[in-house]
Every structure is written in C-alpha cells, then in structure tokens.
Image (cartoon, rainbow, N blue to C red; front, top):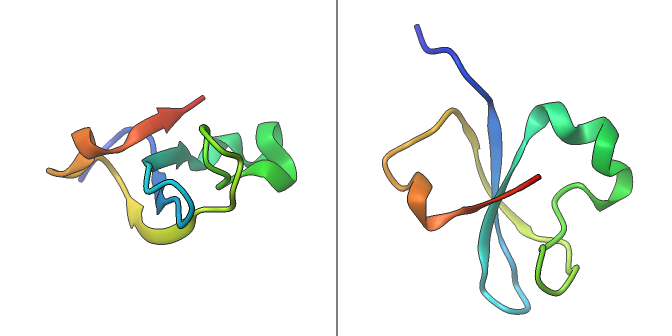
Length: 62
C-alpha cells in the first residue's frame, strides 16, 4: 500500500515541458488544471499515479 499524493502527468505539445499536477489541486486550478506552467497550453495527458521512477523528469505545478 502506498501513501502520498496522486498525480496526473502531462507533456506540453507546444514546448515539450513535462509537468505534473497533484489531483487534490483540481479545485485550486479549475479549468487551468493540466495547463503547461511555461506557455499555458493544455498538456497531453500521459499517466496517472503516485510518485514513480521517472518522477524527476516532471516539474510539479503548485
């Protein structure tokens, strides 16, 4: 069993940045949830889950 935040992982189709949002931030970001922190483009959804081995590749948006 794992404990901790659940993330949605994205890659920006515009600038290529990889980023993640903790799912408990749905209400904070509203319609902007999943948007790239660099260029504000909606990201391409890659996966959902807890922290994984490739987690360091993704910038956390908070």
